[in-house]
Image (tube, rainbow, N blue to C red):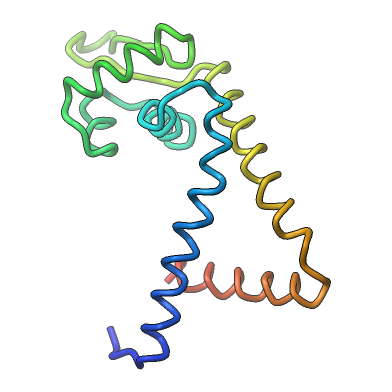
Length: 144
């Protein structure tokens, strides 16, 4: 990694702060789901990452196995997740999002995107174009 300039450091600090503020604002839309942040996060991993074991989900979510067991039990009870046992090795139990779980996450994403769209709609065409260019550059940085 090459040494960065003070200007790069300032941009990085500003971007960090803006990202946190944006996430806080759109996270308010998650209240409509009726799920806790931990349950929504675990469900998101299952929706976008696919079927996995309790242990792997606990690792990905950086929680203990007993904590993940409680989170998953609540998601199963609500009908957002289903449990399946590996027919070849019954010690392995998998968690997978149901159609209802996928729909909940898609609706939440729509609400969050709508909120961001509302914020962006206050910008003029030149400002929107600048945002689009900045997003393309950020995507390029993240893809490296």
